[in-house]
Image 1 (cartoon, rainbow, N blue to C red):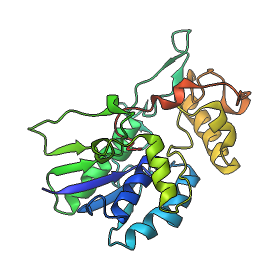
Image 2: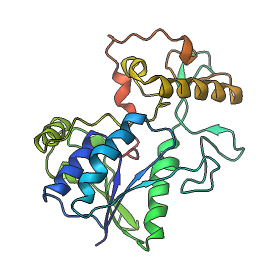
Image 3: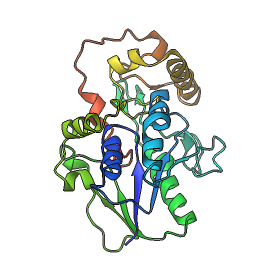
Image 4: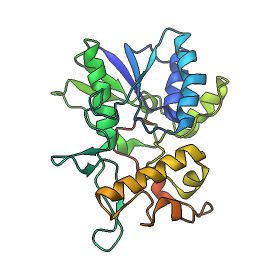
Length: 253
């Protein structure tokens, strides 16, 4: 059975890498991390400094799959899709009805899941198991087994009964620095503290994206307040439950 690993670049993915490096998990037949073109810069710093070199030392090449902004690469669409080519793929907040709601989420499927599966097919791999880095406090994110599907998900951390805290402890145990939470710099699920903590370059990109989206639809906003991102007064002390809602099962963690 072919086993491949779709890496998300965050805490749970770092734990899977540590399990591979220490021999507690077998080496996958292929390993890939999809570049959404908008991943926070801290994710790639950790990939370059920790994940890729440590995995390479045991013979695992964690491939960074490039994103095409013209929609002709591993991804077939960029941030706009749909039949009219004007559907914004990230789940932005909208004031369309007069109250703040949220649009449907298509970005993780188009920017991560489908590109990874196209990459596996390019290697001649047509079916098997895809490792997804959910921990046992994310059981609700699991996808059921489909006997008719060519690819089914497996959850090695859940099989090992590992929580997110266990993942953090394991990464520290092998001597690696703590991984950043993997997310795009324009992800609407960021908490106020995370928005405020973004490096200036990433935040300025998010502000530009926020404005570009409203050029398509003036009711769209990255921040749940329905206020342009560069006008938000971030409440960094407020507990924010929305941050964990990025749970389509396709961002890999």
